[in-house]
Image 1 (tube, rainbow, N blue to C red):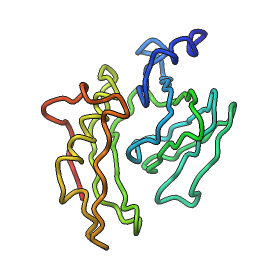
Image 2: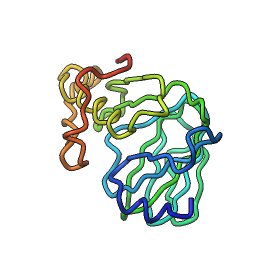
Image 3: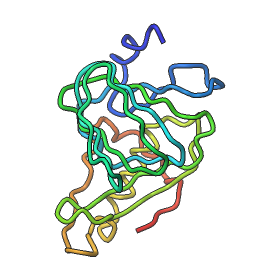
Image 4: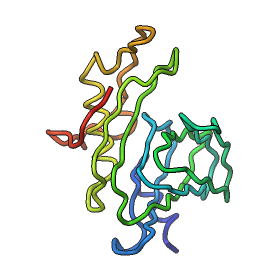
Length: 182
């Protein structure tokens, strides 16, 4: 943990890099973010997110709380199953405290016009997988499916996720894992 900031300088957006030995529970993952998360993230277990530097907004969907504005030192508890999205105000380092046996993890997209859920992809969390590789693959799957990006409520078509801006273009796995729901 002492080298977290040194390590953070070497990772990209939403890398969620484990900073403790992989058998430690809870596990702590680190990311350095300067772009908005391209989807709402969800887990089947409760997690805690800590803002170590910078400032960001943590948006929550399907929750009694809509958002938290985080500054250095703030911690937010995110209940199991709550879709949440990080939107940096300025570049920052975040830590996520997650159970070692995390179970299901997922990405969800919502309509920018009417807020209806567009698409959800869920998978079994793998402690050995590179998180941003998994996220890039989920985003590529979303990008490739115009029907998934089209709102069934209002007809708005969501833009494709800019994988190049996130630094994820070379990370896509040929067969995305997980099951999709719409």
